Structure formats: C-alpha cells, structure tokens
Image (cartoon, rainbow, N blue to C red; front, top):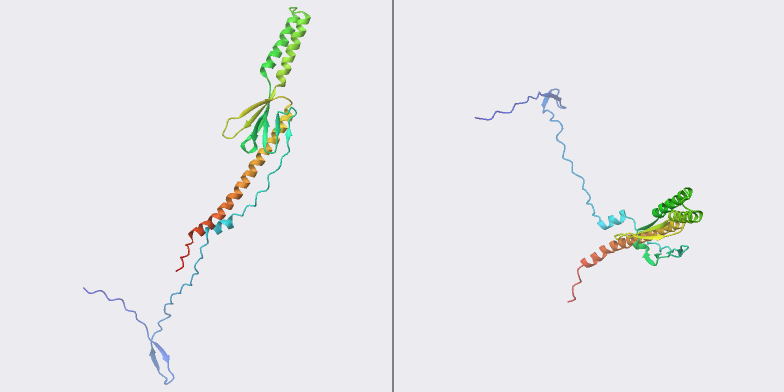
Length: 230
C-alpha cells in the first residue's frame, strides 16, 4: 500500500510589466523571507577561581595585637585577712590566681541559734522575775546574758564563696560590716573578668596568626625540590 501524497498548494500567477513589450509575463511567486540564521552565542570569559584563603581574609578583618595587661593596685581588708593583689586573691593564708577563679560572692549570715537562745533567755529571766521566782541580782545577770546572745546572733558573719571552675566551691567566714566585704567582692569580680578577657583576646589573636601562617608553610612544603646539577 502506497503512502498518501501530501496535499498540493495552488499559487495564483501574478503579472509583471517588462521594459521590452507592452504585454505581461508570468513571474514566480514570492517565496517570502527565509529562516533567520541561528545566532552565534557570545564567548563567555572563563571565571578565575579565587583561593579560599583570600576569601576568608577578605571576609574576616584582622584582629589588632592584644593590649598589655592592666596593672591592679593592692587592696587589703581592715583585719588583714583578705588581700587583692595584681595577680592573685589572698584569703585567710590561701592564694588563688585570677585566671583560675570563676567568681566570688559574699552574703551576710545571721546565727539563728544565738538569736533563739538570747530571745528565750531574756524572756525567761524576765518572766521569772515578774513571778517572784528570782531575786534582782540573778535576774539582771540572766537578762544581760540573753541580750549578749541576741546581739551576737544578730551580728552574724559574712560568708565568702569562692567559685572554682571544675572544682568544689570554697567557703570562708569573715566577721565585720557587710558593706566593706561587698565592695571588695565587686572589685575581685572585676579583676577576674578583666584577666579572662585579656586571656581570650590574646588567644584569638595568636590563633589567627597561626591560621594565616599555615597556608604559607603548606605551599613551601608542596613545592618540589630542585633537581641536582648534572
């Protein structure tokens, strides 16, 4: 079986006037504009690869050299049991470097046992005197003892807590006004934070210097040795 023929297209003739005669002649139909040639793609410039170290250097600014460490003055408590020097904390004949401390705090503590004994003793002797169970001299002695216990319990002490990272917290008991100890504790925490900040700044600077010098050392190792002379 033969394949069917494609359908024919009838193009009507057109008259064209020539210069030699008055008649006309048949002219071939205008085929129309032909297909446009394919556009040639423009050449693309090859991208130059950028080394990773140059990108990292451009993205991260260089750190300045660390400043010299701050020099602290020596501070001592009134009783001499606590001292803040340039590089350490001295507390009851024990020494702690600033970099090994996490922080310190002080809290006033009241002796509950002294408060209770003083209050009950004072009230008991006073009640016994009013009931005529005691004479004046023993009553005065008992009242004085109760007031002394009450004053001792209310005065209490100041509990120092020295926090050491990765180790058990140390406790110290120091008597006296709480305001003076709290001021020394704030100064101690400031010195601890300053020493930690200086250590972190110096570590970051030297780590960056080591990272910048590592690619240069690797390049020198990768270069082949020169062949020996013939």
